[in-house]
Image 1: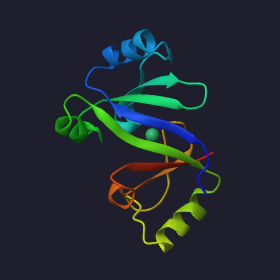
Image 2 (image 1 turned 180 degrees about the vertical axis):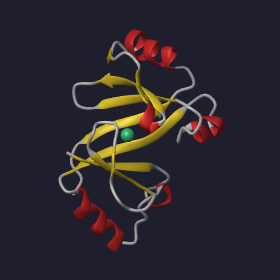
Image 3 (image 1 turned 60 degrees about the vertical axis):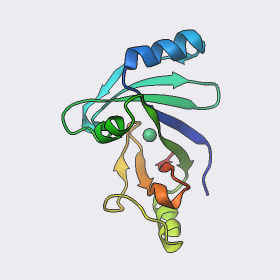
Image 4 (image 1 turned 90 degrees about the horizontal axis):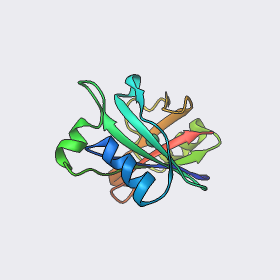
Length: 134
Ligand code: CO
């Protein structure tokens, strides 16, 4: 059902330092910071040949990642995102298997303007999973 790994998201306390580490130390292709106010994050995209890393930093007062950064002040891996062809079919299959979809279970438009859903980390070995329809 799942296809390519679309991205791994890492919450960072300092975006500039994170970008510098990936661009300089690791020699990756790194974007400038992009504010995504509707998602409450500022993102730096690290473009790797086969996938992306997204460095996330809270933006605004009600950022969904503010609590994560408070609990993990030096940052940490936040979620992995897998691609699916049909997000409704994927959701229905997962729910039929007893997996918990976060929120109201309806896909939202994600940071790439594609429908996304998040799955409960306790159902996936402690890892928050995002599904994105491509
Ligand atoms: Co994501």
